[in-house]
Image (cartoon, rainbow, N blue to C red; front, top):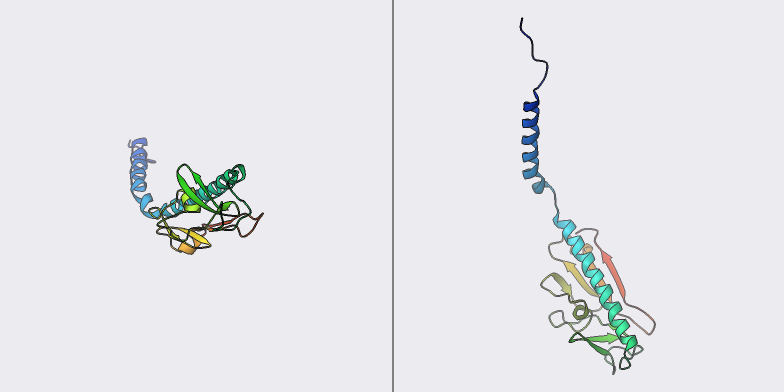
Length: 161
């Protein structure tokens, strides 16, 4: 009397699972776009660096007797030297850099350079992620303080990194 096989053996099932696992390990990186997440995290990190640097510079200005927190950019006593780096100020906060290649404002304070990001100098200063699908939707923007008692405006957009 012969018995008819009713299903798969355990070894056959294990072999199929192993083959599927190997195929998915090679196929997943081809279909998953992890670059967008990396660019988004990079911009979030740059924004955090800019916010922290702005706060640290403002705190140093408040603590210094040589810093005039009520002075506009270019007036006397509108720069600080932090760890050997001169940072120009407007109303006690770092200015937006006008030359990304020679930073003297928020880029110098935050230690952000053109090696890592695309930078559009001016006010507002824009730091964009390299390789973004839409660079304008993958950026942090810094607008310097405009008067006494105002703080810089820092906005982040990571909607299309």
